[in-house]
Each structure stands twice: as structure tokens, then as C-alpha cells.
Image (cartoon, rainbow, N blue to C red; front, side):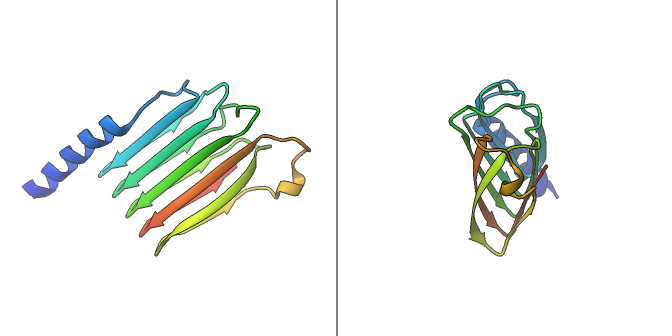
Length: 136
């Protein structure tokens, strides 16, 4: 029991050091290690983001963010953990999945339903015994 508690405390400290940026940042990095984190972005020109969940969970809400006109990238890695990413309607998502024994669940409108020139978010997922859900 003590070993589990120590691992959780160390995980939280490492995750805190790895996390950069805040809700208003156009570039941010999130980490949840042996724990969970909620994040609601208000970026005015989101360009780049990354998220890491290791034996933990992330809830990332991008509905209050605006993409950079050139688009943005989001890299999500889940190792025996999970991440939920919620997007506003109207974003086109270009998805690339990697990993083993994990999964990615997308609940998005088809790109054909989006207007010409709609903002594009390029998402790369790495799932290792974990999962990522991307929805509007």
C-alpha cells in the first residue's frame, strides 16, 4: 500500500513538471500520471498541443478554443490510461492512429459536412493498453 502511495505522489510530481501552458495558451502540454486532469482551452490561435496519460486520465475540452488559421496539431498518448478530447463543431479533423492493444473512438461529423476552408486539427494518437475518444 505504501509503495502505491509513493508511486502516486511521484507520478503527480512528474506530471506537474511535464505540464506547460495554461487554458489561454496557444501551445500547451498536459500530463496525467497515476491520476487525472481536466483542461478547458480558451486559446485564441491554437497551434500545438500534446497530452500524455499514464495510468491516468485526461479530459481535454477545446470547445472554447479557436484554431490558428494555418491549423493546429494535437498529439495524444495513452499508456494504460485514457483521454477524452471534446471539439467544437466545424473543425475538420485529420486523424492518425498508432499503438498496440489500445483504441481510438471518434464521434465526429464527416469532413464533407464542413464548409470549405474550415479549420483543421491534425491529431496523432498513440495508445498502448489505453484509449482515446475524440468527439464534438
